[in-house]
View 1 (cartoon, rainbow, N blue to C red):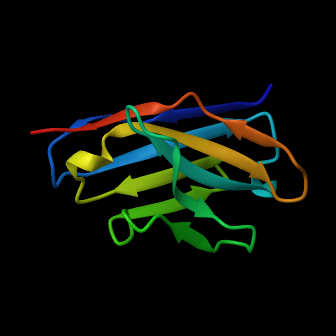
View 2 (tube, one colour; view 1 turned 90 degrees about the horizontal axis):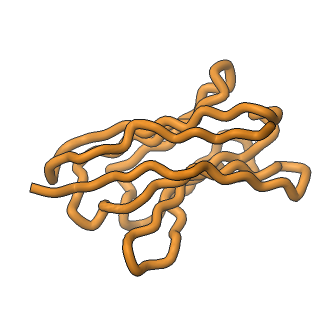
Length: 118
């Protein structure tokens, strides 16, 4: 049974930090490119950060470059999103996604709420 379970969301003040985690199970984690997406109320889901298909290369949305860092621990089957210097506009539900590197498989987590507010 495939599972992606996000955690670490919450309420934080502008300028603060959070680290999101996404624990994966039920598939071979190292064979998947992991990504973080987010969806704010009334907006479409957007890519925040991702490992590309080329090894450990990463890509970020322009809006989070220099503030967010994606990382993964294959031994723990977990992907992280370190979010620093948070802004009001970072408020959203954050989702992790697993995309098969050599298969069309794609899995999503249930999301974790991040609220940036003073």
